[in-house]
Length: 349
Image 1 (tube, helix red, strand yellow):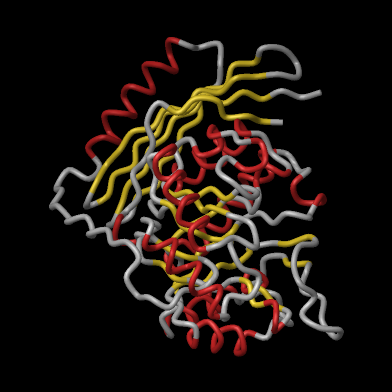
Image 2 (image 1 turned 120 degrees about the vertical axis):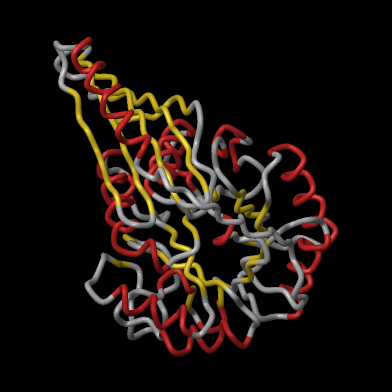
């Protein structure tokens, strides 16, 4: 099991992909579907798209894998098992073309075969999805109801990993209530958004109070993401409206008002030294490698005309089963650059 424990600085997301104002309807119980299972080959994709657009949605929540969660979709189809398919790029293109921006949810609940895998396996799935689909999505949530199966330290490690490989925003979703059923605020560390599950049968006043509390306690923008099982009812829309009025910047189960938070895009800046840091970091890393000559050092360099990413990783073996890794990365793009230092522990039992 690998647990990321420390993040001294994290990459700020590109506000051109802000989730402020986002509007989704991911639960549609009356139709026996949830949009999370959209990428299943048997999902009623046309029906989901039409229903989401009819409910005023701008975004759509989608699983990248599933091992048991969700409505069955009727007696003929079981949509609870999803694995990556080669047509997913085209599927996301279709959504973007009609104005539904995908938000990828990378881990389902009710899926022990998935969540019991190692942290390295989880990060490998995250990396694969970002490498394939990042240009077609507007944000990520590492796990649905994360606190059901992972510790705060594990979720922090996954958030840090995501933020090291994408400039899209990353949100954290827990079980009902602020901090989930454990009331643990550490789950939100380094996240860009709180995806707040309020639970069912709440009044608009209760929803408003929960949103205000989440904003005050975490200091993060809040998406009221789960408050109604059927997102197309007047009652669900009233709850979404109350969340927005209280300061939420997005909704996940429908609303009737348009305005719900706004974040101005970051102005881009000219940068003629896009790869300068990488050159300096290479020299520094070589010196570090010489200093720690008894240990291997790994380098990572990715560069295109739009961005550069340089990373160096050193792993120290504590014994045959346990190790500690130091990760230093710099990400540079036209509008921003940032450095990240992460410490990762790996314990095997």
